[in-house]
Image (cartoon, rainbow, N blue to C red; front, side, top):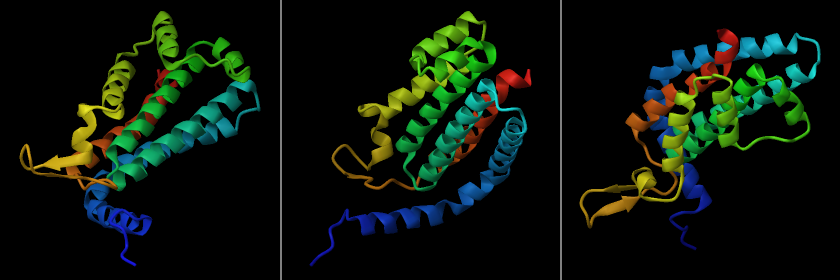
Length: 200
């Protein structure tokens, strides 16, 4: 029996090839990534050392959620699945915004505990009313949404065209050092952005 071109085994081999070829790009960003994770680890340890209150528990849950989104996005980036990494990054931004709200408005804690979570756009509006500068979150989220949605904007991440009639579809991701380098710098920065309200 002939193995299909897009079998799981074939895609796994493709992924391992991309990861191996991405090693140099990842290594170039490793000190920044490590520093961001170390800073975030210190924040988590600080929270864990506090008495178990609603505020501490919600912040720990949000920290866990953010770290998982960022870590997932880094792995997807390493595998050349940039759009999927951007989706994780957009989810991470939603967590960042909600953490800011928790830091600036204690009422958000009770709403979280009661599972009364506002939609991301409402969270951003509430942050603006509280005087927070959310321009960075809004701009990044808007750009990520354009890429993540089905449409022409994201096509370059899934295909490569030599001419109008000649090209290939990038099933399973693609090696693109420029995009990967950008993501390796951007994603760890979200860990720092999460901490912004408590660092002021």
